[in-house]
Image (tube, rainbow, N blue to C red; front, side):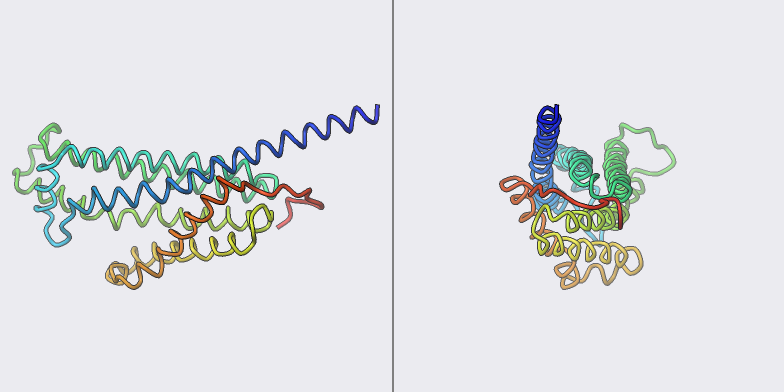
Length: 253
């Protein structure tokens, strides 16, 4: 009887470890995608349209290459979906460490994903207004183009809102990852610092956009998280997580 119980416990432990490893691989892929998709989307799509000092030119650029702009919208939606999958994977990995904090981080990550989708929806509506498929008769065509271009130019500022949630949710998730010892502490600690910088940059963008536009500040605040996502993505994908037997109450702060 005792041996049977021990066998069941061993099977349950192995099943739990397998679930953690699969979730870690998914999280690794999502970390890499969350780095590559927005980066490529900015380099090859959004940067081709945005004219910071001239909203009308932004609108003209979009009308001149509507297909590429639609690809950018799809990429934004994919980024939102990636954030959702990453949230679920990290929650599965870390809920046993502290379910309350993991649930909080999950909620913050879902909020981020929803806001990203809303911004993508706003871009799609703006496109419909530009090409005349949305009935707007209050403005002259030139006024409408300038207004829509102004909205699209404001995307960088609008992105600061989901960025706040990005910084918060990953600081919480990575605190739990640090506590779990599933990955080296120096890696999760570097991640906490990286997303603290993202959170600070988001606040700077909201409070003082002029400073947020300074290249040095952008490099300081963004480059660490790019390196972290690249490193942790490959780490989780290739090495997975260590699954030591945890002792004591895991739900303590």
